[in-house]
Length: 203
Image (cartoon, rainbow, N blue to C red):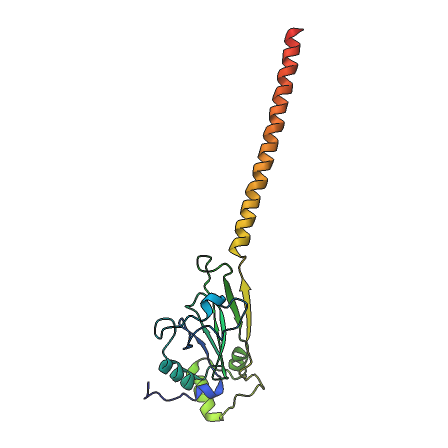
């Protein structure tokens, strides 16, 4: 890692980092968000290289890429965390009712890169780097280039498992009541038919 040299591409367009493990943080105590860890789990200490990346690897990645956005997973709870007061990281919670009551996913919208590539007729990363080296572009939000704020996040929640179970139980109860009511009406109709048949026989 020490021999790695920062690419000029990072000064043109700060990257978005997508990774499974979050960058290093001691715990979820400083996490924000509607689906952050509950209080009884928020102060649980994370283990490096098991729950999160190591401190050295995290510092190297931040220094090397200087990402405008970091998206990670692994933990079962959501987290919005700001590294070094510059680099925002959003940990996506588990997308499974097995791990949490309200799973969610994140929709990321990034449009400026496509506009930038189209305006300058750039087809790949190498061409973009060469174009940057020749023209000495800066990361300004003009003429199709983009800045660190050119992305939008939308968090979408699945229905809560408890709500779904409540709906299922309510539906079963309603179906059972309707079935029983129909059975009682059917029984009354049979009794009435038997009475009518009995009267006709007696006549």
